[in-house]
Image (cartoon, rainbow, N blue to C red; front, side, top):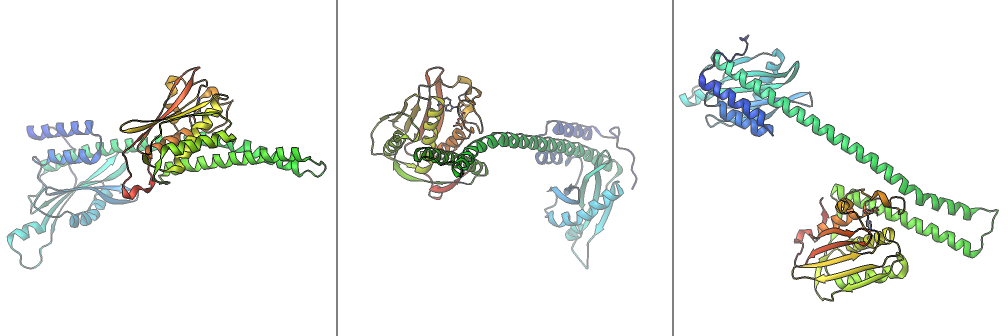
Length: 421
Ligand code: ADP
């Protein structure tokens, strides 16, 4: 059917008021579904219909119902959605409004059923410029027929729905562009950071191994041992780095395994300090631990990973400084502090250092690293329902604080679980 252009002139006051309110809904809309719901709610008192279905193109290929409401005579909308799809396709092919009456009556039926079986469809195409978006289909059971001024009003609603969908399309496009750009940037940063860090230990391993394999030189035992020690240390560094990378990507995808058991924190810290003293990090550890038999729920392997990282950071960024590890039991929490007397961290960077890949520019050349260590520490402490943060006085030193709840226990299902971040 060919219709007169949509006009506001013939609208009654109440209809005009409704169109105005619908316009406001579109302006203020943040999500399409609730805006559509509101539009339908506003339109219904001035425009009679029982069901309404919005069909949209999925992946530019086929039409699918994306929104449907049954507001009228107690009918399920599912059956009409399937039929409506063919009707919506027809509307889009013609690119025009279609009105159709369907009579499903077979044999004798009572008056009520007959009424439900006579359906009046009104289909309106939805376009942005020349691009077809979908169709809006109204259904009335048992009439009344759609009068021209009602069709005009329905076209106004359809026009508003077009605006709403256009707005949503733009929002989606911007969000997906932003996500692509962010991912791109992250990947570039990642490759730049990682390739350098992987190459340098590999370079040493290759260099010293090649040197040792030279047949024209005989190395004395001491030199051979020295070269092998370097190869060994660099292989450890490489393996550490790869572990960190894997942890970090598992954290990202939510598949880092945690396994909790009740453990004594004081014993754990003592063992850690002993190991560190034995030369692994070449730092002097001062232990200041409140003894307590209290056990708290810990994943020991992950906790050791946290403290290893904090002690190795102190060794890297505060060389020569002793490291003090203290544990204080408070009524609700265990408060652990790992402090050094190194150059410190600027106040406005105290939070940044826990971000993925973040490294302070001033120490980038003096110490090797990836900026993943503290990020991973924070995820592990979070999984213990704890808190980790840093404080520092420039030129005097830095402290990393860890607060662990004393009375927390993981749910049965979480005793061994994958961490979600
Ligand atoms: P990485 O050591 O691999 O760079 P981390 O995530 O462990 O990564 O640390 C992030 C950054 O925080 C480090 O690059 C460093 O700039 C800063 N940082 C960490 N610990 C200290 C510390 N004890 N003193 C000074 N700066 C530190």
